[in-house]
Amino acid sequence: MPPTTSKWSSQSPVRLEDMRFTVADNPGIIAGASENVGLGHSFLKSIERSLALVYVVDFSRDAPWEDVETLRSELEAYKKGLSHKACLIIANKADLAPSSSTEDVRAAQEKLKRLEAHGEYMVTAARNCAAAEECVRNDTQLSVIPISGKYRKNLDPVVRVLSEIIKRARGGRELQEAANSAMSSSMIMNVS
Image (cartoon, rainbow, N blue to C red; front, top):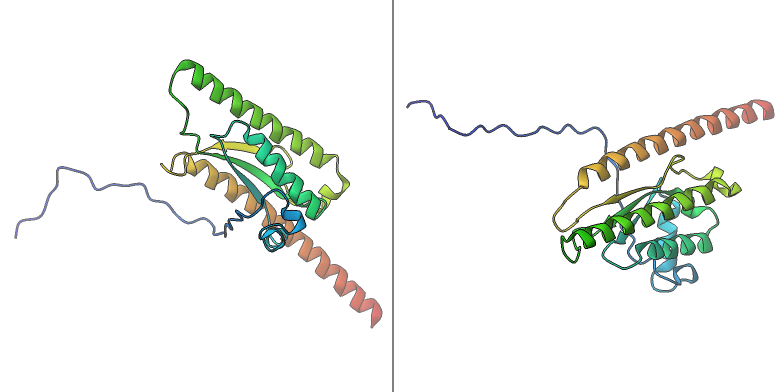
C-alpha cells in the first residue's frame, strides 16, 4: 500500500498539565444566604474550606458590581473575613452587548471599568481589615476578566489566573502547616 499523505497538517497545540485543582460552583449565595435563606449555610460552609474565592457575575446586567457587593455582604455577614478569600471577578455574558455600535462598546467599557474599580475598593477594604490577615487573597488586585461562557471565549486567562492563585494559596498553606508542625513538635518536646 502506498503511504498515506495529506495536504493538511495535523498539528495542534499541545497542552501539558501543570497542576490540578477543583472548582466548586455555589449558585445558592443569594441575598439572605447568611440567614440560611435557600441553601445558604450549606453553600457558605463549603466556601470556608476553599483556598480561594471567585465571584462570577452576569455582565449583561445593568450594575454587576451590585451583585458582587451582595455576595461580599453575605459572606461577611456569615463569617467576618470570609470575603477576603476573593481573588478574581469573572464577568460572564460579556458577549451580550446590545450591538457593536461605538456607543454600546463605550458603555460596556465603562461598565467594565466600574466593575474593576469596585474590585479595587474591595481589596483596599480587605487590607484595612484585621481579619484579612488570616485569609488567603490576592494582595495586589482583584482582577476582573470578561468572558463568554456560552462561546467559551477568554477562558484561558481565567485558568492561568486561577492556577497562579491556587499555587500561592497552596504554598502559603504548606508554610503554615510546616510552622504548625514545628510548633507542635516543640510543645511535645517541652511536655516530655
